[in-house]
Each structure stands twice: as structure tokens, then as C-alpha cells.
Amino acid sequence: WGLKGVGSALGPDCMKHPLTIPGGTRQSPINIQWRDSVYDPFLKPLKISYDPATCLHIWNNGYSFLVEFDDSTDRSIIDGGPLENQYRLKQFHFHWGAINDWGSEHTVDCKFYPAELHLVHWNAVVYPTFEEAVMEGDGLAVIGVFLKLGARHEGLQTLVDALPAVKHKDTVIEFDVFDPSCLMPSCPDYWTYAGSLTTPPLTESVTWIIKKQPIEVDEDQLEAFRMLLFTSDGEEEKRMVDNFRPLQPLMNRTVRSSFQ
Ligand code: BO1
Ligand code: ZN
Image 1 (cartoon, helix red, strand yellow):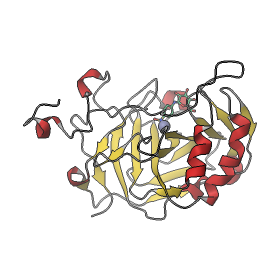
Image 2 (image 1 turned 135 degrees about the vertical axis):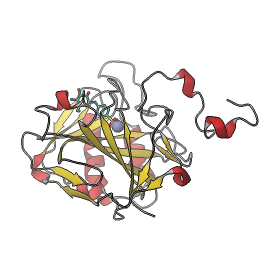
Image 3 (image 1 turned 90 degrees about the horizontal axis):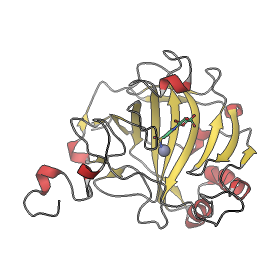
């Protein structure tokens, strides 16, 4: 992969060892090469409608912290964008690095952001449960939002304040009102492509919608993420950092953009 003259055929240099990574034909995350994305004038604006009262709790699952929602009815949903159906919000979580030079799962032109937010939704029109949707090509829709270093994010701070209570793996606290739309960038532009979950079971069930504009968070907020632990109470403490999957090969896929 380091050989001169073959770089363009094999993709950008940020794709270190794609052949060593197992998986199918539509794995995630990927590098989004801006100039290779294709503007699709038929892509609709993404419509987000979340009910803050569907928020249930925050838990440390030993890989990230998840904010989970009541998905028994259509109260927190997205539709439009590349989606043929409406999808219900199940949970959101983040991926981040030990330092600010990396941490996001997706990259744009090989640039990593310090963190990435994933809002996970499932197709409750077609599938009876989340677990069934996970197994199907059109089962899930995940919105990805990059976090960049800048001003403190007041909406995120509500979550950050709760993190010390879920420091250890398998701890849960009630968190019964939160509107995740406060974490959405104002710019409507996005990229979309067909991909997979980025942790096991890695199923190829995700329509990815990656927002072009990052949100700003400050150093203290990222540091609060890095104070969480991969480990349970009583175990030798391991900081929860670098909880992202390596980039996967694009294979035979096109990344579409909603903007020109
Ligand atoms: S991600 O958004 O691609 N990083 C992603 C990766 C894995 C899951 C969700 C999103 N996993 C699923 C599990 C289910 C669980 C569900 C909801 O998350 O497969 O068992 O119920 O939290
Ligand atoms: Zn994720």
C-alpha cells in the first residue's frame, strides 16, 4: 500500500490496509472523498421530528454511552432525505479519540474529526422490531454528525453533566427529557451511502446520512467523554477512548450528496 504509483488505483493514503479488514461489500465507516461524491438533485431534505419526552435513559454499554428512546410508537421519527419510509429513533451515541487528531469513524477527504455522533433509527413501517430491521438492507438509518473543536455546545452540556454517573460499564441513569435535534447542525446538506453497522454484528443494514456541517464542542466536553471507562466497577480502569472502527473499502459504491 505504500508503493509509489499505485496510490490512485488503491484509493487515498488514509485507507491503510483495506485488504486485512474482513466484511462484505457495503461496510462502514468509509472515507468520503468530496470530489467523488455525486450530487443527486432528487434527494429530498431530511425531515426530523423528535419528541423530547421519548428519551428514557443514558447507559454506558462498555463501548460508548447510549441515550435510548422509547421506540414503541412513531413519536420520534425521521423521513425524507434518501429514505423511502419513516424511521424511528432508537438511540444515539458517540465515537471519539484519545486526542483531538482522530476519533470520528467517517472521514472527509481523509480528515478525521475528534468525535462523531450517531443517531440510530429503524424502519418500523416494514419491520416489526429493531432486531429484525438490523438484519435487512433497508432496516436502519443512521445520521452521522461530526464534532469539531470550538465553542462549548450548550445542548451537549446537559449530557456531559450526566456522564460522571455512568462512568463505569453497565451503569444506567434515568434521563427522561432530551431533544436530540439540538445536536443537529443548522446546514441541511448531507452525504448518503449504503453501509453497515460499525460494531458487531456489522450487518449491512444501514442507510448512512452524514451531515456536511460539524457541530462545535469544547475541549472540556471532549475530556468528559474521555473520563468514561470501558471497564466495570472493580476492574482495572481502562479509559473509554478510540472507540471507532477503522475505515472500510468503498468497493462498488457511490456516495451521493444533497448539495452542489
Ligand atoms: S453504529 O451506529 O453503526 N455505530 C451502530 C452499531 C451497532 C449497533 C447500533 C448502531 N448495534 C445495535 C445492536 C442491538 C441494540 C441496538 C440498539 O444497537 O445490534 O443489539 O439493541 O442500541
Ligand atoms: Zn456508532
